[in-house]
Amino acid sequence: MNVIFATSDLYSRPAMVTLKTLLMNNTKADMINIYYVENGMSDHNRDSIQQLVKSYGRTIRFFPMPKNYTQIKGLMRTDAIVYSYCFFQDILPESIEKAILLEADSIVTDDLTEMYSVDITNYYLAAADDLQSKWYKRKLKMKDDSPYFNCGIMLLNLKKFREDHITDKITEIIERGDSKFFYEVQDELNVLMEGKIKILPPRFICTTAVFLFDYKDMLKYRKPTTVCSEEEYKCGQQHPMIVHFTHNQIIQSRPWIADCTHPYKEYYNKVKATTDFANDPLWPSRRGAINKMCFYVYSHVSKSLVAHILGIVHSFLYPVFLYKKMSV
Image (cartoon, rainbow, N blue to C red; front, side, top):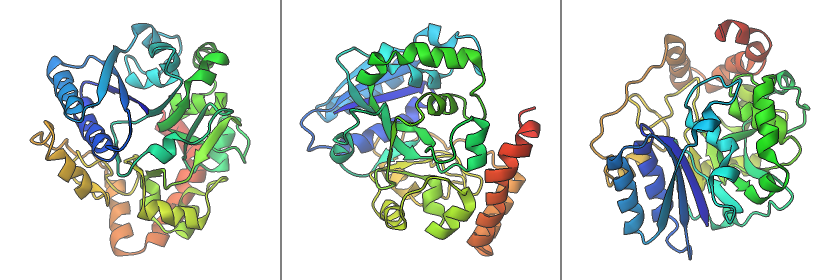
């Protein structure tokens, strides 16, 4: 099993928790090779990660984020590690043909053998459906019925990336600049790979939105044009393999940030207590007044009401109108 991490030095601390959950829940795997793309990581944090991996009898190799990938014309940010997501096929050895990308805002809660065994021979990758509306997809000129995936956790077919010259194609899209909307790298990858990705059910990768609502209210909240079955949705809520702490307008979803109310907060904190990250203080919460109001209504009044109101804003008003104000 090949597993990729990619972080800045700051996120290498919560990444230790992600890494620990991977190692402790996959002890039966014959081999786990970890490849870590880092951007300015301190010697102390690198040593802590190495010792953690060594304690489980696994191997890890570090790769610096190549500077040329942060100097491509048209990038919205500078020196961001997220750009490496487009170029693992170049950064990692050619012998690495298949790998799971784990972001530092996630935890592994089960054995990943079944996920790693998913056949993606004819796909670029497999990932979670990000549950976007038709209006969001239309901003990217995607088809209404094309799934839009979340690029934070991916099962990657790097062999196909290389065969189809993805490096050249994604660089062209970045430079052209017409596939950027809100998530940049995620938007660009979705546009490039439309029709050639496999969606995994929430049982494999469970994002924050899946934990917040029952199936019917989730449909109101995200108004997705592609969606799993209600049975698959419930299975994800109850038995996820990977929990992805994605941002959300209702709760503070990141357990290393103050004011977190995610249902897997305690699981995260128990694992954190066994790492070198144990005594690190919580990062300050920056939730605004609107987010706090949404959480109050969600917690004390009606989840369905919040799903309905935010559904209009998130799925329709934002991609059609509000993005113009929010992007200024």
